[in-house]
Amino acid sequence: MERTSWAALRVILHEHDPELLVRIAQIASAVADSAGRFTAATKLVDILAGMSWYLVKDTEMALAALAPESLLPIEAELRRRSSHPLRAGDEALRLLLRLEGHLRRRP
Image (cartoon, rainbow, N blue to C red; front, side):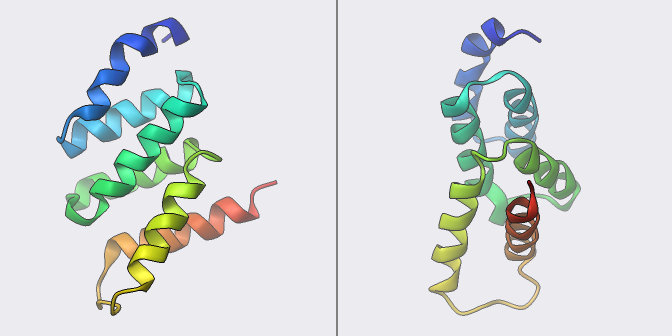
């Protein structure tokens, strides 16, 4: 896909369907400018809590591919979650911590 096609596709980032958002974020990682990549990452982080288990790995990979633009939304969500009591089994929190560690170790 070419960068010129992104302008037509970025409106999909306003959708609320998690699977569609994951797919458009994957496309954004390849063709979007920095602002589009940041928006895609922010949308993914926003929907993590309600995401189905079968999208978790794709979401993690998309957020990694959207780096460095994904680091700020990840850090913001970690700060937000740290102000609340930790819940056992919080898979979104585990994913965010794993990603933050991975992205910070990148050269």
